Image 1: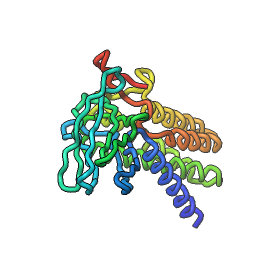
Image 2: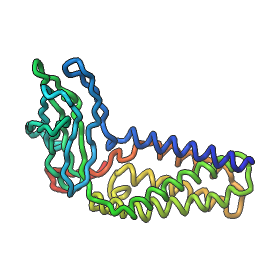
Image 3: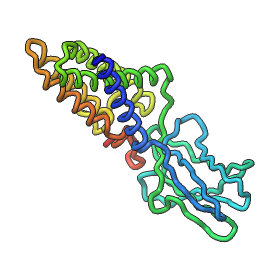
Image 4: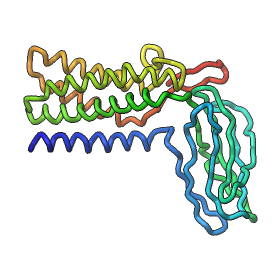
Length: 268
């Protein structure tokens, strides 16, 4: 009965942290609200796009009196904004952004005209969208599953160590295996397909996603080695806390970025 409770509790923790990590990350859609002709609209603006497909912003605005212009430029640069009108298709206002190289970014904001006045959204804090290469689904899904399982079993092992449960060592090994497979094997393949680099963390760069994965793996490796001949459950607890802390950090923070001046990808 207690084991079931531990499994359930660890699952709740990983579901919460996974959701938090995703919605706070810089690639999650930017939610904005705007009032046009006394009607409130809620939009989700793109902050990530896959190379090879048309990058379209589609905004549902049934009011045909409303038009819009998108202003964009490469990020980070001192270039002037390029302005382009949205075109209407039924109830949708649609604008297309030019494709960028892998890890290339654009910053943009939108001006609406409702027939009487202009309304800017995100002009002071432009939305930044990053372009990425296509990652084969089987590689991406496997990576996500292994990382999720690693986080889940990390939480479970930490709880079992707190409870002085006899299976804590077994689940520590399982945790390390999943983190190595998901983060150190499939992770670099995802990075390669998306941004043309296998590894952008230490010692080659400061990609936070790569580095936090490395920190978690090292923490669990130390915990595992430290418990081979002796029982040091505090190492399992510490590794679980470290893993929880690093995976709460929003995904893709300080990630790969194409430097338009140097013509190459940089990180951090």
